[in-house]
Amino acid sequence: MTTTVTMPAAHHATTTVTLASPAALPVRSDAPRSRDVYAAVHVVADPLRACADLSVPQIDWDATLRLRHDLWALGLGVAESMDTAQRGMGLTWGHARELALRTLAEAATVGGRVVVGVSTDQLDASAPTLDQIIDAYREQIDAVESAGGDVVMMASRHLARTATSVDDYRTVYDAVLGDATRPVILHWLGAAFDPQLSGYWGFDEPKAAMPTVASLIADHGNKVRGIKVSLLDAALKSNCAKCSRMHRPGSTPATISTTST
Image (cartoon, rainbow, N blue to C red; front, side, top):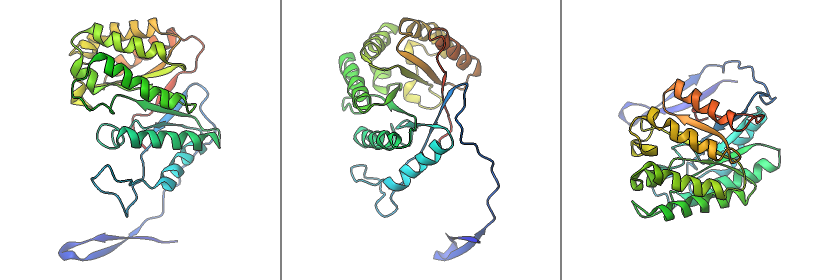
């Protein structure tokens, strides 16, 4: 069957493009055995309602959930509400929470695996207090854990603006990890991906922050399931992964793809 697409052309006209046959891509449906693999997946906009006004519901829920079923059918887990198209520059926390809860409910029908990104993006203040940041994390973690989900503790832009020392980061992470009821995956996102996270952990140079991250994982070994490192530094990423496995011997490493689906 031939597939054609109507495309805009010059002078307000349209043109028809005939697509070639799709490539044959061998797939497998059995999950990897050496690690738990999660893929960050996009949402599908409703073409009849999508607009710049984020207060207007504009997600095609049926198409969005079908994408997640496609990943589960391949043996992959879903990393939900994490992609930058969903958090920080896309969905509000209210919309991200609805997305997460819908995905968790859908996953339960097929035994699919899900982790959900949590942050502090429901805060209105540009530079809240450390206690407010802690409470924001707790609110989001509780929403996910109450629905039976596991969380990825994403880096907080609010914390990056408010913290003035390494101790401030430890105060927040110690409190939040201490209250978590299920093992958490940490997410260390570098300034190359989000300039507002520059100086995270209290250091301008990521390598200098490694001892802080390592000590955090060591102190909360029973609560930290793994760490996703997005720093464009393969050696640092490997060191973080080794540190995580060291303090959770026998556990299956968790990997979250850096390329959205």
